[in-house]
Length: 84
Image 1 (cartoon, rainbow, N blue to C red):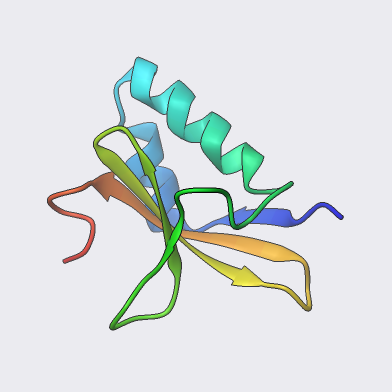
Image 2 (cartoon, rainbow, N blue to C red; image 1 turned 60 degrees about the vertical axis):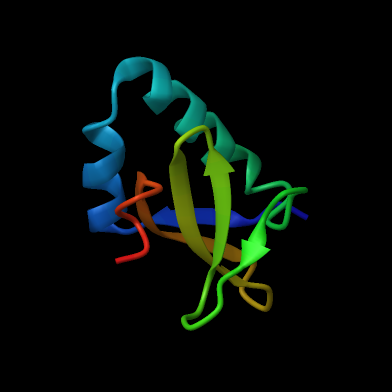
């Protein structure tokens, strides 16, 4: 029951610009979303569509398509900037 992960261009650029240590953590968290798109600690966003998961000071904003078994990573960023 694995989901396919798609990363939008904006999120891919943000991921590539992370420091190496944080890059490894965020990449591993995104890979884990394929097995469980709603892990413990994730929250549904209010005011816009999507979910968010915390990875240290970074946030991964993503959408879930249960019918198509897809997880779409919309944005990745520092907690102070990602919701703007």
